[in-house]
Amino acid sequence: MQFPSFIHSQKRNPQTHMKDPDMVWDFWSLRPESLHQVSFLFSDRGLPDGFRHMNGYGSHTFKMVNTQGEPFYCKFHFKTDQGIKNMSGEEAERLAASNPDYAIGDLYNAIANGNFPSWTFFIQIMTFEQAETFQFNPFDLTKVPHPSTAERPHVLGLRQAVIKSFRWSHFKTSCRILKCSF
Image 1: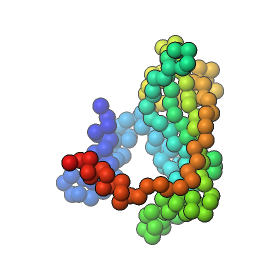
Image 2: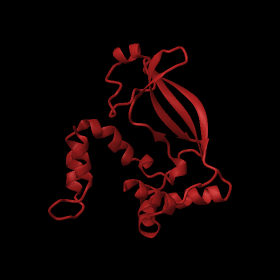
Image 3: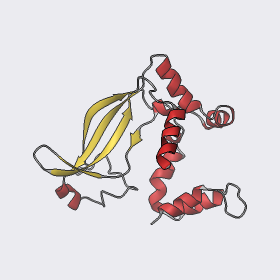
Image 4: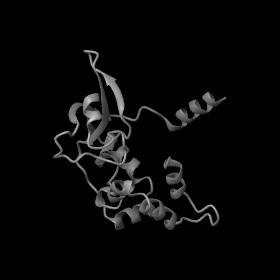
């Protein structure tokens, strides 16, 4: 189980309590299955210009049943309708120092100005039979099938998710969670 080791690699050094890039790179370099995520993180796609300009992907695979009672596996994808937009490393560093809430502020301001962000919801489906003969374990979070692969799971565009308002208060939500704790 790699997850606890990964989480520890992202935290501060337990002895010095300082950020330790050696811990991070030791984890990544000793586990080739992390290459896909690392290449995303350190490419331009790793610096999205706010939440409105990034896609969302569910990690895990779910089992669903259609109206005919046939089970199948699925993964969820949310593709931004605003288009992918990234920032430079210099801009990201500047914002991290001057406006660490840039992404949430950009989202809030877009909604307040009537520029409602949206994402198209896709579902990637695979039959049980396809999963048994797939080129690799289809439940492996570290692998993505190549687009030209004949056995690539089918992707269906289903709906559009549009955020038109913030209907919650962080204070109220926090209080409700706190009350549930006792």
